[in-house]
Amino acid sequence: MKFKIFVAALVTSAVALPSSYSLGTPGSHAHLFSEDVTNMSFPEGFMWGYASAAYQVEGGWDADGKGESIWDYDAHNHPDWWPENQNGDIACDSYNQAAVDVELLRRQGVNTYRFSIAWPRILPDGTLNNISQKGIDYYKDLISQLKENNIEPLVTMHHWDNPRAIEDKGGFMNETIIDYFYDYAELLFKTYGDDVKWWITFNEPKQTCGGGYDYGGISPNIRNLGRGGYICAHNLLRAHAKVYRMYEQKYKATQQGRIAIVVDESWVEPASNSTADIEAAERANLMTVGWFAHPVVYGDYPEIMKQRIDSRSAQQGLSESRLPKFTEEEKIELKGTYDYLCVNMYSSVLGAAQDEAPITDISIGGDISVNQYQPDDWEKTVTSWFKVVPWGARHLVRWLRDTYGDEKGIMVTENGYHDSGNEMDDLNSRGRYHKLYLSNLNDAIYKDGVNLIGYMAWALLNDVEWYAGWQVNLGHYHVDFDSANRTRTPKQSADYYKKVVTTNCLVDSCESSTKKIKLA
Ligand code: BGC
Image (cartoon, rainbow, N blue to C red; front, side, top):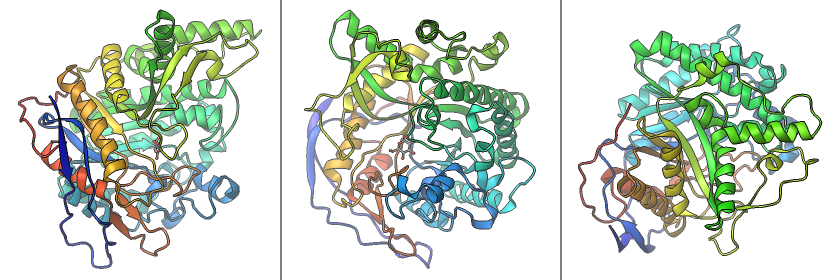
């Protein structure tokens, strides 16, 4: 049920923080906003949290023997790719301030914290030849602090920060990464598996592979159009499957955890009701989300993806398809390698049929050949691709359910709003964004029957955006990057999100619900 309501911001109450720490002064909380928003409570057991990534918050890039990651390498060797001095060397200093972050999470009332482990912090050269005890201890300590505060750790093993030493061997272009990642993952299970019950192997492999090895934009920022992304994805998916099976065979019985991979999507909505546009949008979704979701659910890439890339490769005069093929054994190994489905969502686009891209166009975009665009009148943010499209969230999770099933549960592992990061009175922008996206997700739960099990807001803190420093940010807490202790100050969005997660309700008061999340 929808109705219009005014929501007043809550005022953050004071709590004890570590003595060395001073909290900044909150902005004024004068703003109110109104919007059509559901008054249904979220289901019992809903996982509410924040998400982060090691490189974006930790700093301590070489502290206590940490190895160099590909992002450290870029920060130091390609400073021109970054705004001046805005990189992850110190970031939010979370390496030294885990206790502060946990205290803020506790204040916010969340029951889950998604963070990533930096592979080179644990294994400085990426291999078991050199295990850093200090690195191991850092995450042990973080995990135990979370658990003491009843906050469930949700751990990403890889959020884009390959050890540089592994990249020197070719990174995801070289299949040897499969064994290195396997060793690293097994060390994580052995070390943290008694406490961590929710694992993610890879964050947004479409970005890791597309941005990393195909069209650029993500470290190692290699351009190999229409080829590199597919090779990377193939190795990454094989690594994911091997790690899933290893856990299943050796650790699951005793540790009882769950493993997933995170896909990301700018949902592609058909631009019209025409069959051509509907098919085009479906193809775009299958060749982006399905690129990764199909193999882990069904054991292979989507048929349409194989057909199109095989056919275009042949027409391009290549003796082999640019899309590698899984062996029959690999398909069996891959099929069903997920215990819950994870998706990161920020914006949406329209997809319209277009002429087939010229055959000389060797690129992922050419392979998809769908005209994807955002109308000018869609609500803008500071980032060109990022328009506010709340209904896209509902359509995306519904499509995931229809395409992949939801009996194991679907989790939104990232959702957040870009601005300059300096708006403290962000109730009408960021607060409203979360509210409207969540209202649509709530409709997906109650009106469409989607088994949505959780929502991780990106992010607790303003952090280091990839190659963008703190020019763009998404945090519910402002971070003073000029201060030695990186002072964190709550914005209005922090107060609103706190209200939501502590009441399960987006508005002043909600209809209670007997619905519970279902876990596999
Ligand atoms: C990434 C995050 C990033 C966020 C906001 C996602 O694609 O996983 O690391 O900060 O987008 O731009």
